[in-house]
Image: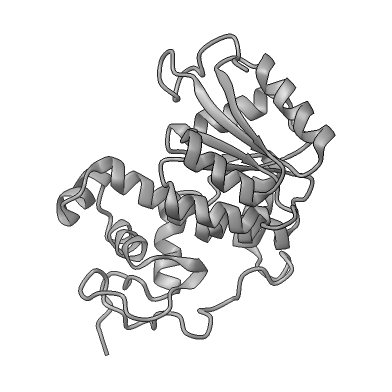
Length: 258
């Protein structure tokens, strides 16, 4: 089922977004598919009744985006997101769920979801989220953005979703930025490469400078940055820098290793 136009600016001129829908409720799933078929620049290439089927459809159709419900039988949305991002990194996941509580939101983001919408989202908001994740940005609803801000500004008010200091097993404050490989458990599910990129962001390097330092493309750096932003809940490079200092992934200027 194909929509009637291009995704628009950010998704590539004339580019159609190929989408898989995953929701265990038949009426809801069929309604979402019908809605997407009316939206510009969207082509639905598959519909799954659970996370297991969603993973299979991604392997079969290689869609650009999966609109993923969270609470499903056999394999829930968080686990399906984790598997899709690990096995098919070119496919992005936008959560589309009834729930916006911390217990739903943060595990989904840590699993690799690049967008998060609640089911009261309108068609324009869905298209915007799809366009954003396809262009390397986050596709978050205003409510979700507020939850992330609350967590960052006052972890206690966010229901303890984030500890005030580094969790047990986190990289110590003496960890030298980009000077040695990450060997210890990292916070919020960060990979060693994401921590390395984060340490370079904290040094003030641009994406192009990080790409040259790591001998990768700027697109790869941008992907790592977007993933670590989603996992940690930071919204910009200043917050990322503060996060890196807090968890010992980078050292503040003028500090020394003890």
